[in-house]
Length: 145
Image 1 (cartoon, rainbow, N blue to C red):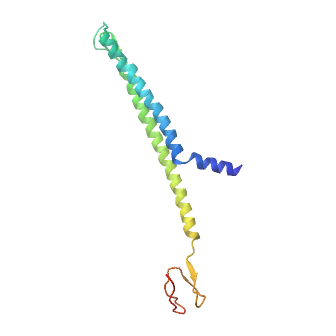
Image 2: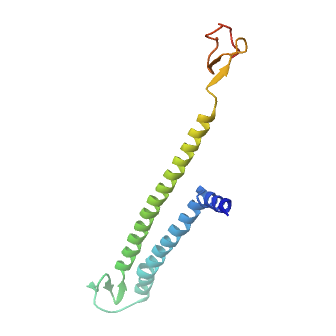
Image 3: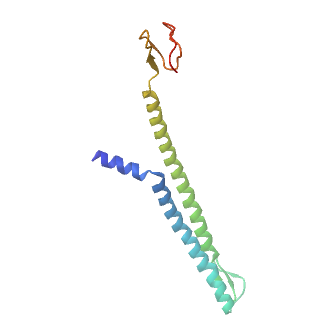
């Protein structure tokens, strides 16, 4: 059961899965902006072109009216602000997740580096010497590179 959760965690924290999830969420938020733009500006423009009659320039809480057609700019601005907030929060979350993944990778790399040998045995005198040595300090034998 523990292995199952480890595999699931590895799958869920892969960059592709996180990027896809963020893309879906931002796509939904962007969809709200587009639908708000359509409902608040494009549809009223079409209605204005087709005709309408009322007082021009009357402001109604986040709207303005031209020839009886209400342009709801408040709803559109709200959708844009919601999108920006969602994008900022997701950016911060992704940055935190990527930071955690990089730290885990860094720790794993350090463990692997620590596991590598730092010494070797001289073939002539069998003394322990530095792995980078080209000449044995004990017997002065030349070592293979």
